[in-house]
Length: 323
Image (cartoon, rainbow, N blue to C red; front, side, top):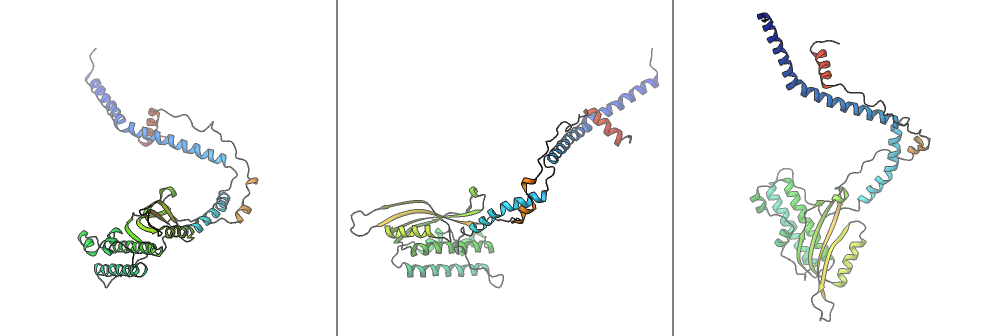
């Protein structure tokens, strides 16, 4: 039996349409339907979790729970706020403030740096005239403070850089003055570590470590450590120390070579807990709270439709506009 021409044309058109629908489904709708099915499963899981939370915490009032939590946390926050004042750098990082305008920043920085170096030299002459110490320019370099010429070569002179350099210079000056006040007999070397955040305390403390190679008499060294230990306004920690007597036969009290590493800490973490207080217990009593109801899981996840049925539902509603 021979097929008529119209039948052949109809069959070709039908196969073409079916092939087009199959291609569109395979290369476009299938990916969309898979994504839609994934999002739907995620929505079902969220609905299930929301129902479980609603069942578990039925009868609780969120504002009362928050008030009770704040009542428990506030004393700890107050204690942390009070203790945080112990961790500070004091005035060791104070610095002159650059002028906003009217002065060339490079010239102003050079004048202030020279002034701080002269002040340090005067302090060393007054408090330790017989103390052997590195030259002023060597001390400046050990404190990682750059001169105007060095900053000019690096082309990094700006307000923030100038503030940082002067702050480091003041830190080094305060360090030398502290050693002179402790009656150090000689300063061989000084090394200052970069400031860093303390990961062990969730970055709430900034640590500043420095090392000193110097000479002390044992009595003065003991008094120096005792002053650090009894300082109620600052945090000091002697991380490492090494000392030995290089002259055992002298009849006088010998000078001991001391190498030590000391760390300071500055509190930078923010504590902000609002509310709380004694009224929270009056607003909310845990003993009077109803017991949580058991969650129901039997009707959590309904049966899913197949991908083809999902596609047909989408096609019927968005293409054919059928209910």
